[in-house]
Length: 421
Image (cartoon, rainbow, N blue to C red):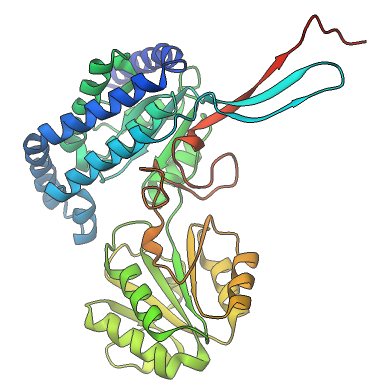
């Protein structure tokens, strides 16, 4: 695959085989899909040493590329993270099968009985960066929802993704399902991405999972429909009625638990009436935890902060950095989030239910939270077992994209020799 012609041929063949596999997978039994995922989980557990060895090669590649500490954290696999992959596969396996679920049914005066039922989308292309666990998450969710999937992982996670992918294929084989139901693009060459984005004959939807550059590329160049996963420009607003301990716990966890995920807090808004007490305490706690705080307003006078500039607002740091400013009231916080947010996840910390209702009603982010860390913006934490991404658009899927969100529906209409007058 050294030239464009050969990459084009390889991608066309992958697409053709995925389409054929999707036709079988669409009516595969719930038991066979469950068996495939359980066998894949067992394979990941059995091959954890090989996966960690493959990941070590990727980490070395990442160091040579000069990846940031946050990006290296996204890339790294250890025993506990591999166990999380195993648990995620088993969790998806244990979920109810969405395919064939009756969403609604009714009778018509004409004598027709009409039902609307879930059906797979067909073939899904998933393009992602860095995090090798997405290989398992995406493969599992697509399989569960009866879709074939073409996975194109990031160059940084090339070896890790291959090792995890081999376990997914082992699961398919054990359950007697077509091995082409899950395929991994076998090259780092970006020409493969360009091909995947234009394979309208074989791919039904593209799911990009990565930074602004990747998502922007996909949205510009795709001829296949896209489930957009935009930046996680996540805000937390500390209302004047915020509980001090809850505020400290939520902000510190949201910023520092894992800085490189899309649910990490990137901007802190503090009601000006609590800026000198609770606001100061939270900022000082962030600084003590090693966070670089870019502050504006009265918060800028706190020792250890650096002055915020206009470029700090609407920025996804994915690092131990946060922007902070005071606002005069909840409406100013809402206005800031509307201007600079990405409709991903935003949070209010308060004991005032009227403020919560106003925040929830007037913001349109895919996920809105109250008194909870934004790091819960994750399909696994939502009870989906895993997620293929957080969709920030409004068409079809929104928020964590799990197995149900990877289905469409069709109408089944039954009559008894019924004719239309």
